[in-house]
Image (cartoon, rainbow, N blue to C red):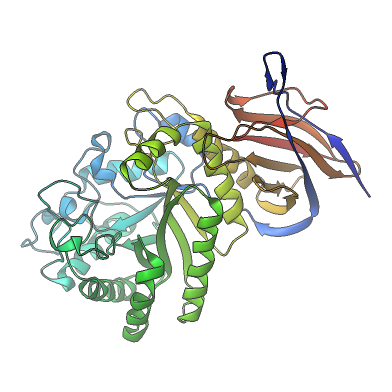
Length: 455
């Protein structure tokens, strides 16, 4: 028998002279319904900078992907990409003198200092500029694979005055399909200046070589921009050639969590159907985006740093936790970009999306997902149970644009004997507020709350 009680937060959403119409919702929690581990939905692209180190540590980012890192001068510029580490392709692949690891070492050491495990993208950053440099198919695929081998040996085996970092994930390339649909790869490529057939061959040559050298590491890729269109042929080729694919990475930018979930399910079905049932599915670029036309693009730029962008991130993590997805990697934690929600450019002030990732880390610390749900669309939930028997509950009220402003009165349905002990809330009024636990729990449109619940 459950008891219902209106619990928590304290948001005065009253218009001058009158009240605001409110929606109603019931959120249920079942600590006895154990669902499995809280997954790394709060992984991200890129590591800390000198201005974000302490805040980054507090986020407890589980994995940090090394993509587009050289585009940020705060990381040293010359780092991570193959043509930055091995600048002269004619050089001796076996000689330490052919490699420049200096800035890349700092990037990865800073990730580890902040508590994040590096997720290394082998390949090139996107090139928006007129002249292209590193995105052409390598002149010698086998040599390129050996360069990748020596990068791994530097970071995992100490080669060339290197380290024993134990980096597990090694991703081959990024978005080779981005400019395929309209043949832009022929005139103004950004990520791969070749055909998909050329890339498929590069992947197979490299993946086979790396797996032979490092059988215990996870080798995968290729971070498709359009996985539903280009994934099937890629998977067929990889399978036909007997190449490893320990994880399949893909990207999705949208404003609807349901649309991301749709992609996640289709991709899992595609992997299973093509004989890759054991291959991990990793969505390692995602963020709020209303569209790619100019007006939609600038709308997205304005919204990502706001509570709307933060609510989208929290809602998407809640949804993907329940889907056949192994990891989410938010794009991007480089602070001086249009994609970074957690920090403002240059001065690195914390913004609302920081708390989306932070609240998820609080769930991950408890470790075990338990049952939760809501009877209303647009309210998203996830609950976690600690070894000590305490529960944390994340509740998100998300709407896909800033035109919806109806708050929601939420009733928590808890088992007998359970009660809320504290609340943390982020909304338009402020970030990580600590309202008193009262009998009035109201969530603004586009807001989120983290509850501590005990018996």
